[in-house]
Every structure is written in structure tokens, then in C-alpha cells.
Image 1 (spheres, rainbow over the protein chains, first blue to last red):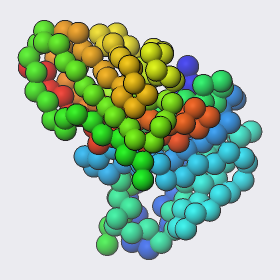
Image 2 (image 1 turned 180 degrees about the vertical axis):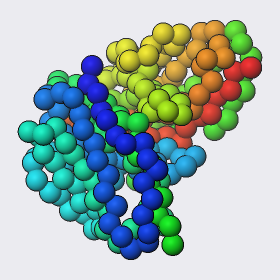
Image 3 (image 1 turned 135 degrees about the vertical axis):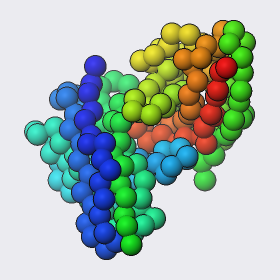
Length: 111
Length: 113
């Protein structure tokens, strides 16, 4: 059983700062990695996917992957109060490619 | 836009009742999933289906069954609801080679009294 570890938080950052969200996973089979954002009372929404080592940038979001260290992170630059949500890490691999979701990190961006 | 809809946003049922939760997606996705989400436990996979009439158990299938008679519709059935099945239930769908790119419905908050 794959294990996905995320710090539950809350991680509190001031508006305009960089928020850094981290995730480690236990198996070496995972080949693709996904970050979901979940606002309070809402369902998860896919915001980033990354498949190879290194960085992937999309607007204010950067996903970083290090397969050797079994570590994936999400950086949010110029954090806004609207980024306040829970962020779920979800590695996927093996034949089914069905992800295992971490329990999520709560991010609070205060004005 | 991908749309995944669920039959109810809130549902209250009594212990022992049979409960049906329905999910419909309009993106012609082969894969469909049912999760429950509880505080502190995260998202846990109950069942998934990769084709019509095909189903696979997830991590916590006990007490649940599923039905997929049409590609766009995936139903979760609680044969005899119990209080420990009070939870948020989330349906999702994806293409078969993109299982990690899931599109979620709005969820059903089920309370069993």
C-alpha cells in the first residue's frame, strides 16, 4: 500500500509571499504526480500534474519532482487570500494509474 | 467543460435503509470512481469502474456495492446504512490512461441517523 505523507498544517503565509507545500510518497512505482486544490465545502480540483524530474511552471504555481528522493512539492508565488484551501498530493503509478491521495495540507493566506 | 453531477448534495437516511447515490458524467470517460472523505482521514477509494459492468474494489469496499449499466452513470449503493457511513461521498471520472487526472462531482453529504 502506497503511503503519501503531507504536513496537515495549517500553513499560514502573508499575502504576496511564497507558499511551499511538500509531499513524500513511499513507493518507487509512482510515475505521475498530481496536485489538487480543495476549498472548504467543495470538491477537489486538479491544478497541476508533473511526470518527470525537475520543475513545471504554470502561472503562479510551480511543481517540483525528485523521484530519487520520492519527493514532490508545490510552490505558490505571490500568494493570494483566494489560494487559501487544502492542497492534496496524489502520486499515481503501476498498471492502473489510479492515484493515492494524501490527507492534504491546509494553506491560509492572510492579508 | 467536464461536468460530473451527483444526485443529491445532502441526504439524511435512517439506520438500515438502502441508499442509492448516483453520479453522471458527460465527458465520455471510461473510468469512474467513488470516494468517501472524512476529517483527518482524507479521500479513500471505495470502488472504481473502468468500463460498463466492470468494477474493482478500492481500499474500503465493505458495506458498499456499485452498479455501472451505462458508461456515463455510476451508482454507489449502501445495502443497509449504518451510522459509521455518515460521510461526504465524492464521485470522479477520468480517461483510462489518465487515471490521475480526475474530475470530481460536487459531493453528497450523507447523514445516517
